[in-house]
Image 1 (cartoon, rainbow, N blue to C red):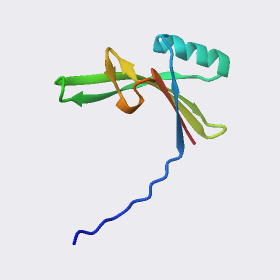
Image 2 (image 1 turned 45 degrees about the horizontal axis):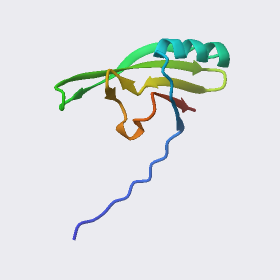
Image 3 (image 1 turned 60 degrees about the horizontal axis):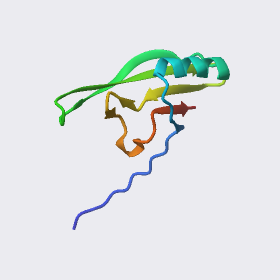
Length: 99
């Protein structure tokens, strides 16, 4: 008889979705101005898609608050017809807040 093992995982982050027809850099500018963040461009999120036989790239921006110990990442969910997280295909951008 096969044994089943259950793993309980907890994460210390929240994910929010944004629908916007703005370019990612323009959205960052508005978020920085209105919310007093300092979102800066970090390395792209990339992975190889065996379906289209090439790498997919998604832009990412990050703000690190060292006073209150949290970080905010803005991640592009749609780029050139590709979707980073297919379950959230109706979201253009994802905001990941980690503490």
